[in-house]
Length: 324
Ligand SMILES: Nc1ncnc2c1ncn2[C@@H]1O[C@H](COP(=O)(O)OP(=O)(O)O)[C@@H](O)[C@H]1O
Ligand SMILES: [Mg+2]
Image (cartoon, rainbow, N blue to C red; front, side):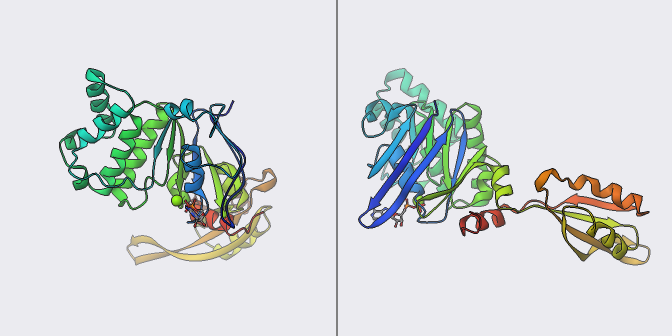
């Protein structure tokens, strides 16, 4: 049984269809990246799964329990991190956590221990006596995560936990999420930025205007977007000839020749010609044949590297509906 499942989940606000027959399946222990531009329907989906919003039609289930019918049994299973934590005037960090622990019926020594544990996990122990409102946005987001860990839920529903964070706080949040993943939690995390989730999540779903455009592994998302590979190849001399050779290799789509700094030698700065080879690996073709082809044609290879895949480009292509 999947840990999270939605079946034709639909939400309308008046005439607006915010979620349109959404079918999501997320297995136990999976980290699922829910990606889409603003207004796509991410928050709406997460709020429904958090039992805070009623679907217009269709169904959503957590661990086989149906949202709207078995909310009481569902709530102990889930931890919901909203996009904004709200304001807690005159409350210090431990009071804040003790308040929520009490709401989950955690009392006495157990409560002290749980609060200390979640503070340690989120690296906020040193802020235990600081006022909540004095914390940076990054710390507040980590405190939000600490709060939902108090009752040790199996499922975490996180709505853009990294939005508005500076790069360092983003990395800290990512490390925390990795730790939660290692603990075996099922995580649904939304973002409007794909690269942020690609490293963390094993699966991604891409949503736009309430419709799921794609759901699957990060790798298959990239294949679907037909990003392909770009390989940087340099040879010791006769670059133009080498390019002619490569043009005939099956899978090579395009070659452009760029000039690059190749360090300094006794003649001054050396410029090197680098071929940017676009390769389409569909149909089981592999760019690993390229070096052989060049060597067999009498070329000496001085560089052979794959360009980092541009996840941003993949995401833009998928969300613009270019890929059906
Ligand atoms: N309470 C509401 N009333 C009316 N429309 C809403 C409400 N909440 C969200 N919407 C609309 O539903 C769509 C999806 O919103 P949302 O789920 O917040 O998207 P996301 O989180 O992906 O940015 C948007 O068009 C938004 O304007
Ligand atoms: Mg949102």
